Length: 470
Image (cartoon, rainbow, N blue to C red; front, side):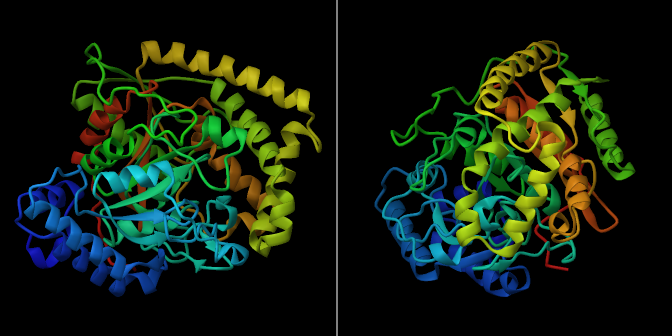
């Protein structure tokens, strides 16, 4: 592909070309900035573009190459950072007008690692207020649109990150995930992402992290190829003393015994997958089977329990932030939270007690053990991202009943988050003009096994990005 289309190149291709002086970081950064200028007004994915800063960093990257200095794995490659994450010299806004001047002086660990790897920060990606919804809209920055169909959500909360990658603004975007905030946007926008094992990528924020985020939340990359995910995850997974729970686990483990068994989980009785979702699962299962994996349909009722338990532990944690939501949040986040809490009452009542939450964390441990025992026989688990395709915009604020429909459809992402295990979302095809994909779960700190399986599915996928907004 010609150098006039550098924004279409993968991060792996760009890093190699920059390192070997086939292209300069300035050329690459200018290409991405021009692409941002062209398409970002159509989707509102990046709500802050740092052109001067990015070009200065690119020039410094090129000088470092000329001087023969040691180079990081992402040296000279453009990346975006989500606005709920600390980047030195920029405001961590969470999409809130009250936080628009919340400029921080230091990078969060996940951002610091990307900077150490040589990444060029070109902009900040959009998120819903308080990063709470699967719909990327807020009073400060406005609404992000899905580049495949602007009437559908780009996902959330990393909707800006996924839309920017899908349209070629950057090859890699940073995001985070507590209930699918990496996986759902990647699924909705037709790109790929890895939700790492909790503890893999160091993370912290000047605003602090709640208990549920510390135990279930992760930071990770969104990209257009699995190869770029490999590169980005390795770049982000370095120790940082600013993180309280980092685990220095190797990125590559011992090869799994062959043939590798894969459990195919379609439904746990919460929300029936649509025909399009089942078709994507069948396509992925066929590809893995053709490659020598043994794919067998399984039943895992513990995912139903995990889905409901997540709501107790995470929503009751979020309840502590509701005074801030009421004070600073927009009407959409207030309505979404109200509807979601109403849905949660179906399982946990109006006012769960501290004893319920403490018992919930005890049960969480028991469920993790059950899943780990299952993964001894089936090292990989193939399941949907969602029970249906990308929702219409703002579906979670239409009514309580519609919110319930949205919430239960997301059971695969929510349940996986409770376990703290790694999960990859990989696109498969396009159905009715919208991207489709699947999710693969694996053993803790065995992201390498997920990459291997996802690359097989990716090689046969009938979907391609970047795209022009439609």
